Image (cartoon, rainbow, N blue to C red):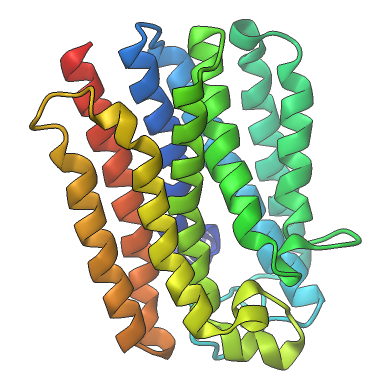
Amino acid sequence: MRPAMLKCWIEAMRLRTLPVSLAGVVAACGYALLDGGFDPVAAVLCAAFAILAQVASNFANEYYDYTAGLDRAGRDGPRRGVTEGDITPRAMLRATYIALGLACMTGLSLVAWGGWWLIIAGVFIALGALAYSTGPYPLSRHGWGEVAVVVFFGIVPVCLTYYVQCGHCTAAVAMGSVAVGLMGANVLVVNNYRDRDDDLAVGKRTLAVRAGRRAVRSLYLLNGCVAVALVLPLWRTMPAAARLIPAVYLAIHVALWRALGRREGAAINPLLGLTAMAMLLYAVAFAVAAAAVS
């Protein structure tokens, strides 16, 4: 594969968003460490599954948005290989199903830890990856994208990753999964905030289109604050130094929220990656703190 083509495929993977899928797995490992059930092999397999599933979802989004006429050349967001003619639609569709197939094979290996019912969970996740962009009611085109992120990048990965390691789930893990999901939803909030005018022009009814930029910017702030509030009971049981972690995350979150209100168009792009990285760094810090006290 030529270097230029390889670059196009890497861009199609949307590397800036991949910390979102990793954060849920890392956070779940933190909970597993606290409860004495951490399993590094299961954790690595969960991380691989999460990344592959997200890559499949990103490929599917690019293919189905192109075929529906929802992406245009020269957009403010990152370059879209299919729209710009760098990658053929057929190649992108094939890559979608290859990534999805690899995710499913990885998920099958987790049956050894979680039991055969994980196959049902895997089918649910695969359908969710596609339902975001296609099907009779594509979630991303009707204002439900942020909810999908909370479910598939928060609740599902955190709870399942914890379950395959510990064999059960707890209320604290469930609350933490929602917190991670809200942090992840903010990545999509930034994306749709930037793309609002383009999406409105092509009839894509994202939450930013339906509610307006001011409302979704307020939602960005609210999501981060609620996420921290949900996990405060757990942080109160941690050493004093560790309790600074949610405060630092919140300070970064507020700074990014303020920056979002001062930028337009392509200038917003770095905030998408920074929002995702803040989420991952929070999850890593939590896991490190959990390892220190376990």
